[in-house]
Image (cartoon, rainbow, N blue to C red; front, top):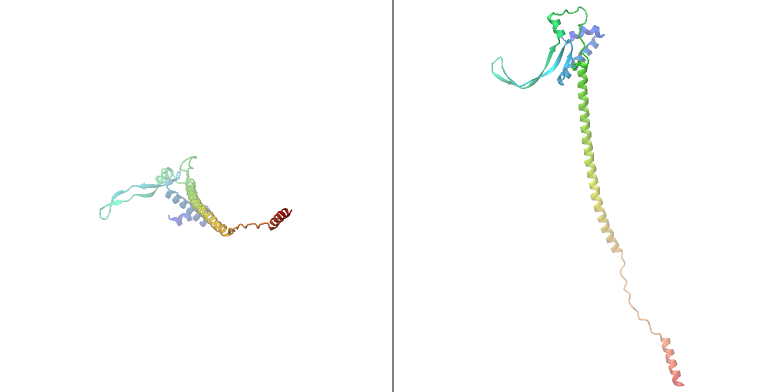
Length: 209
């Protein structure tokens, strides 16, 4: 049975072929994404999907018999559940025309099925996005601080230079505006002629008497 046949097999139960195809795609996509992320997808009674790491090892080429170095790799693994094994082995009979009874996972189980695994993967993605956003915000804030510091330094330098130039210019203007010192020449007061004449007249009168 391939994927198309699987869709046709459940089309009647899902209400149509398109709904069945969407359901199969959603389930397979969720399983693949969870296993790639390193989570274990477990469906009680059916089986579990998980990622297994294989260390580096040596193998032999079946055609030449030459020893070949095999790099470390990861592979997906499916382990059938006990109920699935019992049905395949024949120890339990497969119901006719009905659905295979698959026991629900107990509450609090770490392997809570595909939905739990999908939720874990979504939570990890959301956490990664938040971390990336925080880092970007931190870098932007640091860049703003650096730009502000540069502007402040430039303003301070401009402020220190401007007053010095202004003071020098003002001093030059003040020197230029100062009026030249006027030289004051001392002038002698003229002798009082009238007083001298009166004195001479008095002396003459006294002599005549």
